[in-house]
Amino acid sequence: MKSLRLIAASLFITTSLACAQDVLLAGHVLKVTLQPPGTENCPPACPAMAIRRPDGSQTICLSNMGGCQTLEVKVDRVYRGADPGKTRQFTARIGEWGPSFPVTEKQIVVSEENGNVLWSPATEKDGRLFIDPNRMPKIGGVPVSDQDNNGLVALDDVLARDGIAR
Image (cartoon, rainbow, N blue to C red; front, side, top):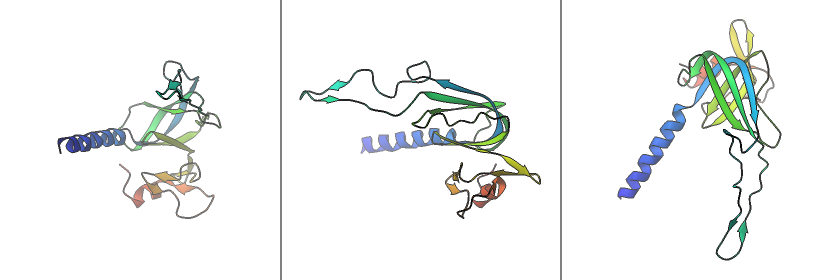
């Protein structure tokens, strides 16, 4: 019974910490940094040594993960999550298709949920901010668009649907 309580408490703390890091913000890219695996802030995707089991078999690791990428954003507005101050960094592994963080001078909207970072170009029309639902299909578990369209979606409409906004 004690171990069940300990497990439940651990899950609660882990979930709380993960949710505390979730954020949705608009800003401008200051810097994108790419790092090879095995460097200071980018551990290798696989262990250096293969693991040999008692029966003589050997475990190997194959990965299509590249290095790591860091996106530094100058924060214009925070819609959800803790206010990070003037800048916020997002990190992710580089996958099979290469880096995914944008190198642009235009404003972007960035979402981080449970360590998963998504971004969309921000388009301002009539004082409202619009995002691409193909780049950011969900925000806070809420689908950005309820249709299969390629048009832009107003960010404030998405946030109002589930009361996500600050």
